[in-house]
Length: 150
Image (cartoon, rainbow, N blue to C red):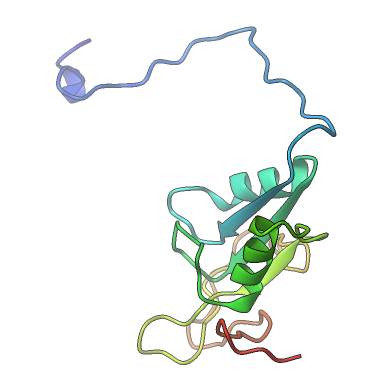
């Protein structure tokens, strides 16, 4: 340790090369649902997307234009219903779900805050584009929990 840059006071992580490898998950991987908000500051979107789409027996629920870290319970049918059904013994969603984010407090509309997500929960372009904050989001219709429409 050194006093340079405060490293004497601040603990640091150490990184070194290793030959250890992660096991490759197979079909015995447990049934799993990954919930990921698009703008989560704690878990980068790309990490949640990779886990939700890359692991066997796993489904992804992506919440577009949302930044909260704890996405469940969220208060919408598109996010909460598949999770509740799964936890009560039902099937997990068969495909990726892209759910609309809720408006900010005191707002009635959700606005696009980054590059829109497509049906596979991927960003429409490789290069992020920050959109006009006055343009409503393109994600599907937001339904509050308890209001069923069909």
